Length: 107
Image 1 (cartoon, rainbow, N blue to C red):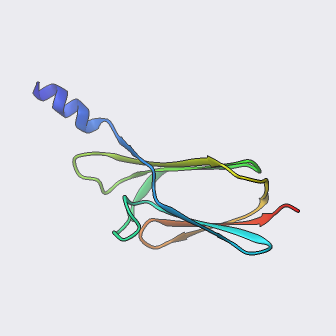
Image 2: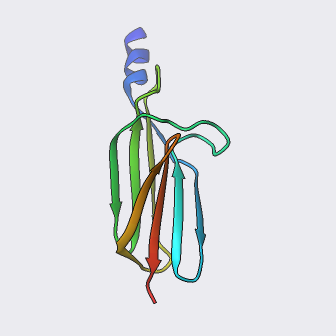
């Protein structure tokens, strides 16, 4: 029984991180916070970061190096409502586990 509990601790818990989406006439901004909620501190030490963004889809994932007993794996993926120009994407890492993405809209 104890072995089963230890195995469960080593299996990462998959969490969908909170994000905000805002836009103007020309750009779309997406801010992802690697935390359980926006009003708590995020994971500052991420590893195994994956950023896979196309004109149609958004996919970001990362593991938290700070989790103590339970490993946490953050993953956010969705389809865009309309295509974006992924070649114009800019990406900025902000403090406390935040990522900021900016895209130019396609006409």
